[in-house]
Image (cartoon, rainbow, N blue to C red; front, side, top):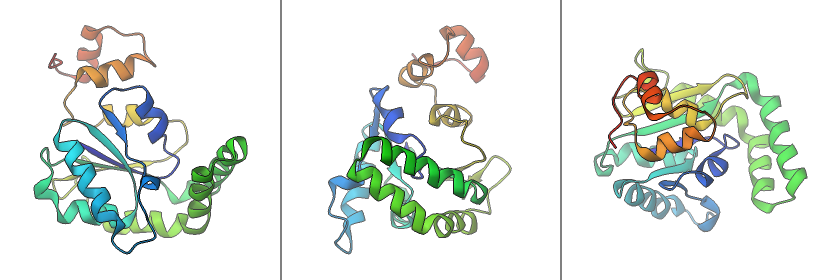
Length: 195
């Protein structure tokens, strides 16, 4: 599965806790070249097809590439996660706080991008993916989740998407924030775990 998630949603911290989660950092690629995203997306597809859950940033070029190349994605599953336009000030302030706490170049780039492009980014998602069905699925391929407040975790969002198979990695990542056993987890998720 590929999780396309907006800046500041917690991709890096989520991936630290789970073996099969990969935070595919865009900064490893030369984004100054015209078609940088092609190699990036091909690597994401390759890693996903090998059974990993790959987290990518929600850049227009990346999303568009995945949609055009959907037949190459083995499980035919993309999750798109982004905040509402109402969260603009909170989101930008949050990213500014992260940057000022760490003074990391990547955090600075994220903060500046968000500060300059937040509304255009979010409006692109809203306009492009507004035709979702009642379950939040666009074109039987993209599961869309709009964040309405800052009290969320990516794991919680992923668990609430019905068609995602429960794997040991997902269960173990959820155990970090929850004290439930496998049977309780299966009851909540509405199905038997595959392991």
